[in-house]
Image (cartoon, rainbow, N blue to C red; front, top):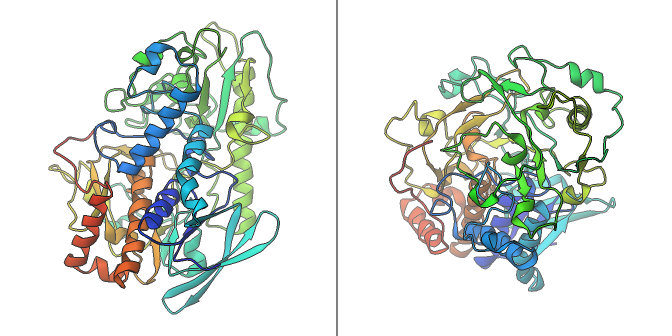
Length: 532
């Protein structure tokens, strides 16, 4: 296959990159390792984690189109009660993590609809269940990438530009693109929260999420896993008890935090506050990542909410799921899935209830929501990827409130914006949370461009951040913006007969790509706002 732009990875960054490049006139192929497109939004079961201003500003036009498409899907197809239907900023799950908690299949439907006209016109070709296995590289340019599909076949795709939008930066090692994993040392980055010694295998925990509904009076308990005793006994010394329990470190203070769990509260979903600047991480777990609130629907239509379990208790600390040898990576992925299964068993049988009892046997896995036979997510929630060594590296000194009291660093080559706290979950190296405030920030073009490779671009959470700053550049709207800007940059270079390195080094070319981005609805700077 021969195309102008190959996008490897069909997560949020990949989808945005493919659409942007096609809109710019390029012929595009996009590959994805899973059956579903959507990445963290769908295959990883993570509803959008967004900043407090998302309904007003701070996202690209196309990301807003995705959000409105999701809301419109519920209005068209779900029996919403009138009070819910009339809410402009409808939050289908009334989840506290953000103002658009929703089911992954709905996002998938909207994504497929957005791609459909481009696919029909053969401007975008989508190859699902394709994994990159090798690349043809000559000097500092990639010529082609070969993929293995789920049926054992192979396809080789030639292109002018290769955009890595995979969840773990899979294109980087096979193309020889310089990258880093894990934690850099403080001597390297100068960051106050960096460790003294670098550790490439010290990464944020992954989580194998799952969806639940609750049916009082029924018993949906799974069989006791054979390794349950092992997972039940894990108790890091800084956790304030066993990991399977209602007490865990507070991300901001590290003090003991006691969580609550109340399935199917009879609440008014219209009145739920979904603003982490005002409610920084609810102590009540059922509603925090609830993706369907039954009280949005006409009376009696659904007998349970649906919620996502993406909680501290399933953060897998045993080791990274990439970066080692294939056998070790697979073993850690299997262990992460086993931890989540054992936690479900604990929830159903042993978890302390407010009434003094133990367990909620009425909790039922929802394979229909996850799109899998076992009810667990297709893919683990990946918080940290391989990261390119780019033309510019974003460090804690660029964005942290403690390091920059007057605001984030402003970049002459901004290609987008984002906002989130520097939020690192406990790590495979034994670190506790690092969760500190950061300013609303910009995305520098140079962080998408590798130091050496001429036609490879980062198009997801694999841009040139550090272990620390990845913690604020990894969420949904930022990943989308990164991918969209990478797609526009590739199309711009094809149009102008130039290369990303030349663009990064020229104020005139930077100005041209920024004009193109602004015309496409990409915001390049923040108004005057504070951090949270």
